[in-house]
Length: 435
Image 1: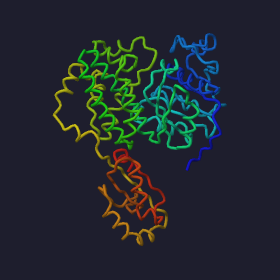
Image 2: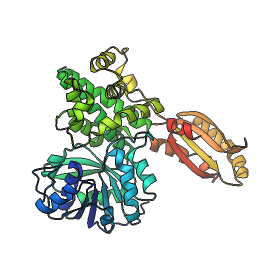
Image 3: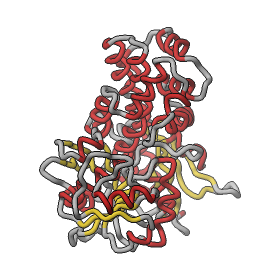
Image 4: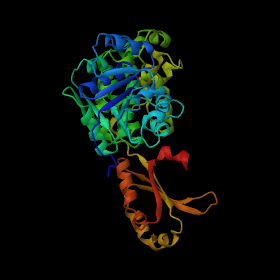
């Protein structure tokens, strides 16, 4: 049940006044919200105040009168909705700066796309650490900032685990030309947004090398297979990444030089170095920073992502473009269907309540019968404490997605009998380092 009470949003704060942050400020203003746009650059604040235009990042677009630009995070204290549009690698610091000024219960919509370097965490994980207890949502989907700012039709995904909150945010920011589709799968929305930027660099390289439309189509298709594998290993739903925030965003970002990430790839494919490709660019190409993080996350999860690995190697100077392409084309032949959508493994970690031994023993025969008939069960055993004594149970199950694994945990007779104090379901590869 949702703990969110929809009283209606009136004042949106947007963190990050790049092209996308400014475009989303436009959306919120057109939806009838008062908007405060926070910018790091004083010239952006001055430009908006003097000319009603973000001449640095979105020149030529007249901004709505409801948008006020500020430099200090303290100016967001009165907002009842926050859109965080700082680049992925700067999101943690931006949210920490926001934390002293964020009122309890104010939702934060995460609009950056990427995987944090070092920690290999998704943006919701970063936000949960920087803003403990803050309600979170994810906005992702096929959208170019300039088109959104100019009021051209756009559809996106608004993912939120709290259905009532997600619906309230979607209704608050929707306009006749900006349509948010509601979803509960934040992991799928984040994984799609992060990986598509890396794949867009690859598609740019193919275009820059003049390898043709056939190669371009094949790269998008096989890239989508990689995106899906990673998302499902993280616990996402396949149908989420097959929608706007996955396939839709991938097709857009990989098909137009307007894409900052594809433009970097075009330069690399045309023979430029990475430094030359990035020279003079004010806007961040998220895929450049996310590529090594996506590669490392895939390695941690045991997910095969050869295209993303090749991009990361090119960006790091570990491989030349021609050699990386040759390496991809010379990989052993495989069945396409056999590798695209594996059934992921999940760890169900159950910790006993103090004094639950009697309940455990009484329920054990029914529990064992349940395990014998459970589909997808790979392993079940006692969870031991540091002293070697049992403190709970550990099950490893194969399931379609996180929700299916959670349902299996909920149906366990031990759960119904009240044996467990806590039950946590996580993708198995992520759980390994925590057990």
